[in-house]
Length: 165
Image (cartoon, rainbow, N blue to C red; front, side):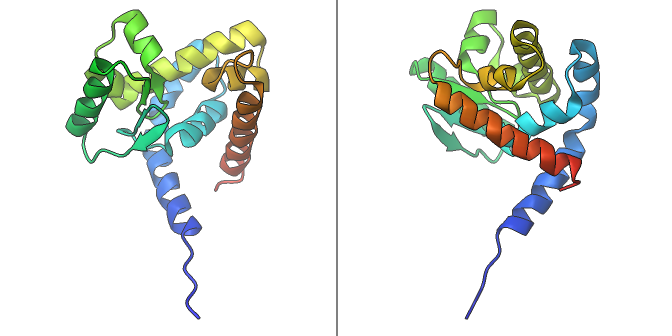
């Protein structure tokens, strides 16, 4: 019998990616008064701490480079599709609303700053609670179960981070 374990390998690479990115969370979390562990947990949930990951209309795409990620994002924008980019999975809504170039939003430091800023807005609106976390991903008035499931998943990531996993 052959047994293959994927989880430890994935967790190890996730921890490595998270470790490399952690310093980029310090300044925005301090500036916007967002608990760093919460922002890191959201990054783990959103992208597995992959800097170039893109979600186009609900499907993950894992480009091999920033350039390839930019091409996918620009295609999605031209096609009028919903998409999320980068570590914190910044939605096209924010990119279009503020006229941010996709190239800049994909930069890890910028992506984290924007994601923490968005999270801070939800915390100001709803308080430092799981409702704010749910709203980061899905407005509860649009899809309450999806928002609650997202918040539960983020709780799991917070616990893993606090346990050093």
